[in-house]
Length: 293
Image (cartoon, rainbow, N blue to C red):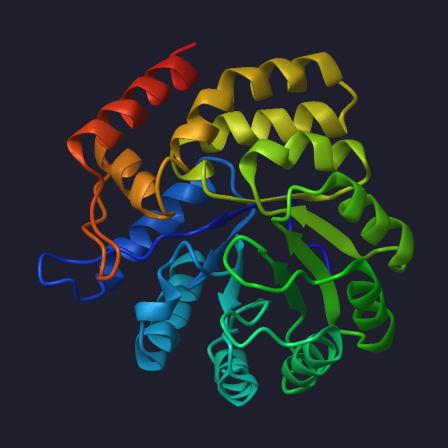
C-alpha cells in the first residue's frame, strides 16, 4: 500500500476550554492536503495523544476521515506503552474508516527487542489495517533495532512501513537493506528528510508541513524527479524553520507557528504549555527567514 511521500503528523486543535475542536480539526486536515500533504497522521505524538481519551481519538479518526474522504489517507495513531490498550484501540480505529494505523515504541516500560516484536505483531494482527511502526528514541528509552524491524516486516504482512526519528542514517540504511522490497521508510524528523531520501527512504511524516507544506512538497518532488540541486536548496532554506520547531517540546512550537501563520488551533493540555514570548519570537524569525524566499 502506498500512503504517499508527504504525510503530516497533525496537531489536535482545542477550544478555549481545551476540549477537542473537531470542526477545526476537519478544517486543518483539508488545509494540509490542499497545501501538498498526501495524508495526515491523527493522534500521534504531535497530536498530543497521551492526553486524549480513546473516545476523543476515535471521534477524531471519524471526523478527519469524513472531512477528507478519498482525497487523502488518514493514519490513526493507536499505540502506547500497553499492548492490550493498543490492540483494542487499533481494532476500534479500523471501524472508523481510516486507511492505516501507526504505533509508537512503548515508552517508560522499556521492553527488550523480543517484547517490541511481540507488541507490534499483536497490534498488527488485531486488525486488517496496514501498520506503520514508529521509532522515536528521544521519547522512549528503547531503540527499535533494524533486525527487529526486518523481522516484523518479513513476518507480518500488514506491517508496511516505519517512521524513523532516530536521526541515525547508518541505522536507517540498515533497515532499508534488510527489509523486503516495498517496505517504506519515512523520516520522522523534517531535517533528515532529504538525507533519508538519499539513502533509499520513501518520504516524511512531517511537522513542518503545517506551515511549509508547499515547500516540503516541492523539495520531495524535486528529489524524486532528479532535480537534486533544487531539493538541496529548498532544504537549506527550510533548515531554520526545522530547528525552530523543536526549540522546545513538540507540538508547542508548531502550534505557535500555526497561530503566527493566521491559522490558530488553540492551546495545549497540561503538562504541555504554550510557547513563551521569547520562543515565539524565535519561531516567527525562522518562519520569516525560511518561508519568505
